[in-house]
Image 1 (cartoon, rainbow, N blue to C red):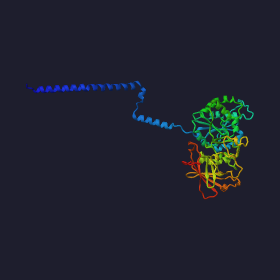
Image 2: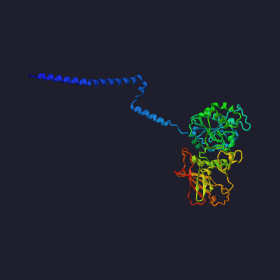
Image 3: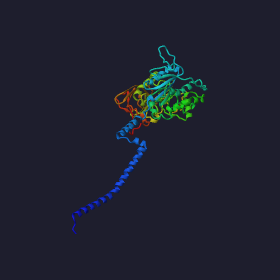
Image 4: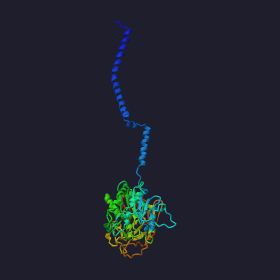
Length: 503
């Protein structure tokens, strides 16, 4: 059969049509599935955006998203809590018109008017001379070098029945509440002390930084005399040595103190009344041994030359103890401490122990205060015990009356140490130099076959300041005797103990 050309065209068209139909049949399911998926996706977005406006608000342009996150990061850095500084502390200093006349000289030694906040609380306004000026408020007397003076409110409504004490204890105990009412803006700590208390403010700050000021804290120390603690309390912060109360605890005290005070008319003073109210709030004493009540008599040289491994925070009863540097007035003696405090407050009076083995001497350095030479190679556990150059508060002369171990101040000339007292301190490029001179005590006869320390008249101690000393675990610094050609001088280096170094 003959095939016409037209038949070829029809056959080709028919075949191609079948191919297209078959291809469409294969593609159609894929298109359908894709369309359904796309429709579902649109529906999900419609539900989230149109029906949930909060989700819509989170869909931001990329640059806006980056900017907001940068701001959040910046705010996080800015809002990091600031370490406790002096301006976070408000002092409440207990005084009276009679004592403030001369004890203000103690406060001038440590008060920093441009950096510190606080008040001196008197029982009566000061009697002003013609050349002195008072403010319009008769209860305030201003001074550029001292805290502002305020007059305590009347406490005659409170009962007081203790026959041995003075009712001023009620007034002074209320300084906590009255100070809070006078200044509570951005305060973290309230610190109480007496007008005869010498503070080392930099070390006070170092200690308070260890604690969370948003919690209830009552920080201080006990008496050095067992009988005092037995009479009052081993759980009480002695007020003259100073104590710190966190801001929220001070607020809690302020709310209940007057009611609390009415329950304890028989108590002796202010600090035991504070402790009684703390007990009602269930807050124990957190002990920091750098607060020194000094319920002692005589010279505290032996105690300060073996200070505990803790920052020196305060010294109290300055009128009762002898001047810490002999042959100086009490104020002049304390003023001498200001040089080492400025150079290295963290290291003030910290004890280091080392040996001059060729001469068989034991050296003890109380940095910034005193150096002593002892004949013989004495163990560190003995040298770290204070020498009893002082007596307890009741004058018993009993070494067991103290709350710490002591060693005797020997009459035997061979066993008596040689003392060298601070005369000067200054900074050089990489370290500080403190100079100590012999205290002038007469020579002591000794038959021991050990070199005589009396030829040493001058001590030079080199030390690199370490402001972060108390951010680390407590440990004494090490000291090393240095070679010198000067027969009358001993050179000592004090610093952090090296790896493997022991006393």
